Image 1 (cartoon, each protein chain N blue to C red):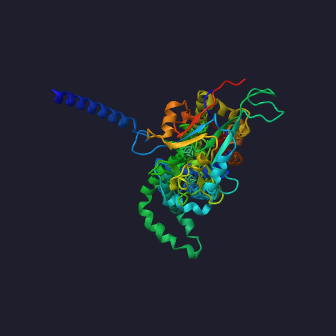
Image 2 (cartoon, rainbow over the protein chains, first blue to last red):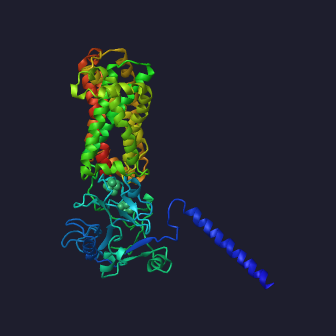
Image 3 (cartoon, rainbow over the protein chains, first blue to last red):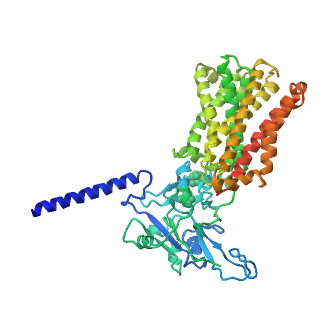
Length: 235
Length: 315
Ligand code: SF4
Ligand code: SF4
């Protein structure tokens, strides 16, 4: 009696697991998001916390030894007002419109056009981490990836003459087991980084709890950069 | 407030500047000229080296060589060129293009050598070592010509696929682009091959072969115009992204290039020279050279317009 209930329960359980596994396999035919064995590193940019101080940018330049005048990330000022001039958001000269900043950097697409078009495979997805990164030795400098990136966040490194993108500090901080430079340096907690496939990670919980958005999702690029936007009405 | 977005980027506005447009131009001329001449050869079952074939093979080889030069010089460091030849990614249109070009370039040189066999005798003595090579390969001439025909069409189409893969640019991210590039490559390639045949290989302006070409030119141009119209209408029905890119045709920086260069030089002037100024003028050699020149310039303007306006009117 006892035995048979156990068996039935076991059976139901295995059907459930099998069904779930089938669903996962079915959904993962063209991307690796559902592949939970591998990590999926994501970054969350919280617009409500960013004050536009630019420490992230400086940290990135330092950690990744970027040459003068080049940056892998930028902060776009939105609805920012120059004293005495009209506000670009509301059109008045005096207002309380909030300053908003948006992080501009490689969106770490799961379905990355730059990786697809690169003729030499220099722009590639790192096997272990799935992070989109560069092999400077094989890059021919054809700039195909730069035109193909829908976010226009790739550029040529003037020193090495090869293409470059934000790769979450894959070869620098991450290799040492540290958080990306920008995340470490943000004094306002506007940047969060982690493995979204690990259900116990902070970013997983954050993504589960918060409304997040991604940039230009209609391109079908499946970006790994999430944004928590300021949604408050502005007058 | 709908959706988060940014409008600045880390790269410049135009990642692929004019040398790439010039490359697309030369590749189109090369592929187009060879396609026209080889189709003529097969259609008429020719076995001798006609002036048109000579002109076309010269255009084919010189065109692709100059195109390659532009491509290499546009790399951030031209010395990196070998990497494209050594590393491949078969998901990439550019890699597939490299494979096609690696066969097409030597074949176009060999075809030129076949066609210009007599002229090769006048080479300086030190270069005579190539003659036995050409003569030894002459057995394979027919199959190699067929292969080259396929590759020539592929080269024209590939230049279209190359830039239509750029999803950020509604003007060029369309499936008619490869077809448009084949059509415009054919008309400009034919024009160049004809001029070379008449000018350097003593073809008669009104020979039977030239007459066939004159007859096929107009349908090719009509098809080309149709493709441009299809591209235009796909933007009209393409939602907000498309309507933004439509500005390229109506008041943007590149509008003049489109209306005067592409439409004016590419279509209106040739029509005027052939039909608008009387039969006598239409049959003159002036009309012949001027029409060819304006068709070729129109095609260059088309590449330039698509590449620049395409990259500027991004989403
Ligand atoms: S944002 Fe651009 S550079 Fe980054 S992965 Fe996507 S396509 Fe590549
Ligand atoms: S510039 Fe380098 S990384 Fe970019 S597509 Fe060309 S070879 Fe690949």
